[in-house]
Length: 256
Image 1 (cartoon, rainbow, N blue to C red):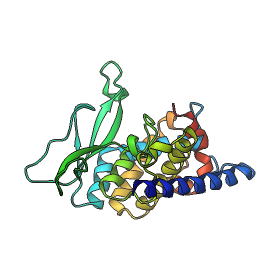
Image 2 (image 1 turned 30 degrees about the vertical axis):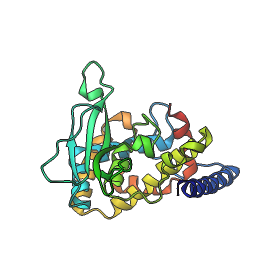
Image 3 (image 1 turned 90 degrees about the horizontal axis):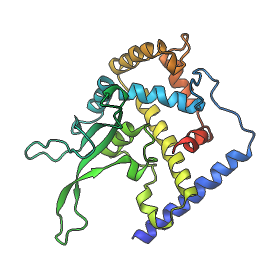
Image 4 (image 1 turned 180 degrees about the vertical axis):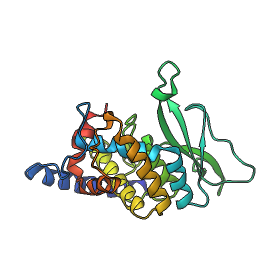
C-alpha cells in the first residue's frame, strides 16, 4: 500500500516539477500589479501573505470562520507547545489549538502564534482492531516548511475540517524526499492553501466579510504593512486571485 502511495506521490511531484519548470522557462513577470509595497525587502507575495495571515489570525474572524464552516470543530488556546487542549467528557471532535512561541522576554505581542490540531484518530500501532487515541497533528509535519509562520492557522483549519485534498503530505514520501522535493511540496501546498482560502472567503457571509473590512482598514493605518490608502479589501482579494505559483518562489527560498 505505502509503495503505491509513494509511486503516486512521486508521479505527482514529477508533474509539479515539470509544470513549474515550464512556467520558469516563460518570461518572468509578477502577475499582480503591485498594490501593497514591501517594506522590509520581502517579496510582493510575502507582503500580501503577511496581511492575509494577520486578518485570518484575528481571533474574532478566525473563530467566526470555524463556526461558520463546522458544527463540530472547536478552538482552544493553550499555554505552550507542550500543552494539550482540555477535553470534555465523551466528546471526540477535532480541536484546533493555538499557542504562543518564540516569546521575546515574555512579551506576548512579539510572540508568534502557532496552530495545531488535536484529533481522535485510529491507533495504527495497536495490535487491537478499531482502537483510537488522541493525536497531535502539526501542519509543519505534513504540509508546511517548519517555522514558516504563515498560513498555519489555515492548514490547521483544513486538517480539522477534513479538507486536505490537493495538499501533498510530506510524511508519505519521507523515504525518497530530497531538498528539491521539499521545495516543490512547500510551494505547491502554500499555493493550494491560498486557493482554498480565496474560495472560502468568497463564500463567507456578509457579517464576516465586514469584520475583514474593518480589520483591513485598521491595517491600512500601519505603514509596516505597505497598504495604499486607496486599496479596499475587495481589491486586496482580487489581487490575491492573480498570484501564480511562480510568484511564491522568492518567498519559499527566503524561509530558513
